[in-house]
Structure formats: C-alpha cells, structure tokens
Length: 147
Image 1 (tube, rainbow, N blue to C red):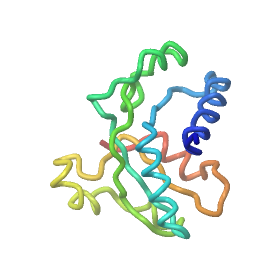
Image 2 (tube, rainbow, N blue to C red):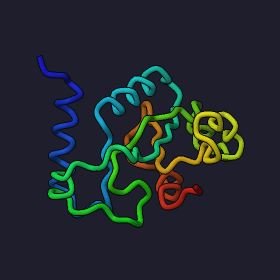
Image 3 (cartoon, one colour):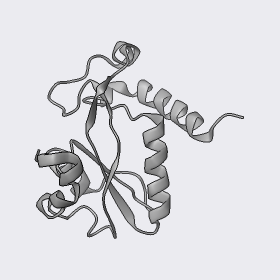
C-alpha cells in the first residue's frame, strides 16, 4: 500500500511544476522532514507551531529538480540545497507564535547551533483550523529575516 504522504507530495509537486513560473525560487523539503513537521503540527493543535530550517550543505538539490524548475536563485538563503533538520522554535496561539524576538530564543539553540542560535534561514508555521494562505504579517516576514 502506498504512503498517503507520498501520494500528497506527488500531487503537490505536479501542481508546483505546472505553476513554476509564479515562484521566485524553490525549496526542497525531504519527505522525512515533512513527515516530522506534520507530526509536530498535529501534536500542537489547537496551537500553531513555528519551525525553523537551515539548508543542509551535505544535500545539494538533485540535478533533475534544477532541470525541471531552473537553477535556484542565489538571492534566496539556502538556494541549491535541501532543507535540513527541522527545529521547533515556538508553540502558541496565532498572536504569539511568530512574534518572539530571536534574541529571546538564541540561548535555547546555542549549544546545538552555536552563534546562529535561533536565526534560521527558513521558517514555517502551521495554521490549524484556518486556511493555508499566508497572513499579511507572514507575507511581510517572508521578505526578510536576520541571520
């Protein structure tokens, strides 16, 4: 029996390919990472979960993805690499989950991540019981992150 998540990813990837001209760049999330993210999101309901990622320098994008989507744009952090291991940064309601200053959480990650602390290249947060489009604050935050 096929894995439901593999089927969903296949369908999503097909749709993304059809709309590839709408995206300024692409990020590849390994299936095992996506599985972890979904698990954390489900465990956190009704709260949102904020997850940070960095690119994995040991896992460059497969050649076929750049053949299909074109080369990654170097103006985007993490271009050319699969996203690395996810890290839970915060869990809370929609007003507090993404408004925690990074300097407040740097100490939590300093042993594992060194000076970068909680300054991740990419962030994702769940929207339980809400539509999946980015809010205005999400869209604005996606344009810039320190680090």
